[in-house]
Length: 435
Image 1 (spheres, rainbow, N blue to C red):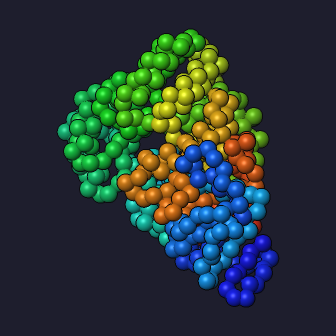
Image 2 (tube, helix red, strand yellow):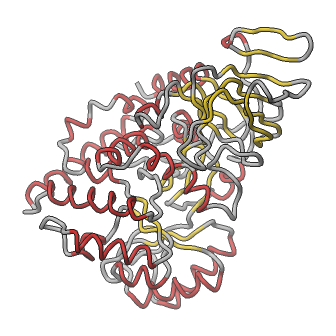
Image 3 (tube, rainbow, N blue to C red):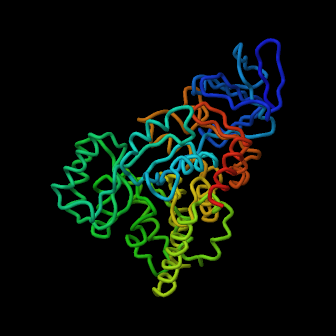
């Protein structure tokens, strides 16, 4: 229940109160807290939030509340930092998606930070709008329109585009397929001069070694790793894994595996249509997904590639990278084929668990490590004083089972509390729109 503590103390039933806004002081009381600074659970804690920031954290019986504060009784529940989607897509205007619905879907599943990897017109203005308390969107950090073999016409054009994107204020550059090594080298050189990072795909014409050497900040989809190891068709060996891990650790690169998406490519479309979250997707988009998946699945099935070996090699690589301490960042490439924003993050976490990562490693990939990645932008990703108040309250301990991270009682977004009842109401509206 809610408790409004002014003097005297008044009790209210949760459903009778309007959501607490970011400008109010709020305290979670009697919470079990996963700060994500380590794997410890702090029991019976009070976390105070003021002006969208975590103002304090301490034992509930020793922590004095402000004179006027809204409190959320978190007894028996677990408070964790908001999750990051490190390979998100933000649809442009005029398409089949309602952009505000997409952004809310992320939030509804605890995603409070999204690294957009598909720059489009209007997104920089959307990024500013998304920082307001009234707009229910993850905080957005956006890549510029993709630099690829289709969009770059030679090294000089590559340099000019990098200069322009940096001047426009994009947060990073997205590199894609088809670029020559000369074009890629020009991007890397100019990005360093312009003070902007770059990440994404690894062009087959460039290769993983050059991506590492040139300073690519993230390798998304584990792109080109199997080719680097010589493990596209045969089982990966420990020597291959060691080589890949050593090369990664010697570079400045992190990885965004998007493993669930790649596992999905070898799945018949009719099996994917059972996903309950598809009710939040427009019919036209679902039809497109079904057609694309059928084509991909047929290609995999007829291509002479053993998808089982391929996926097993990716899983072993992910486990080896995580064991080594490499920077593994949570991302699911949504919206994408059967990847519904927000929901796909939890499917990604499940696949990471199947690969052998512990719940703590998986949570860290979605909280503290993205916070460190974006440390020049803001402080978030841990439950600590001064951090932005992006928080998720869940019913059970996600360190015992990562699936518990999806049992959400409410989300705090930049200091605004959104209870499960409000989340469910908005989801019902979206589902009805696309029914």
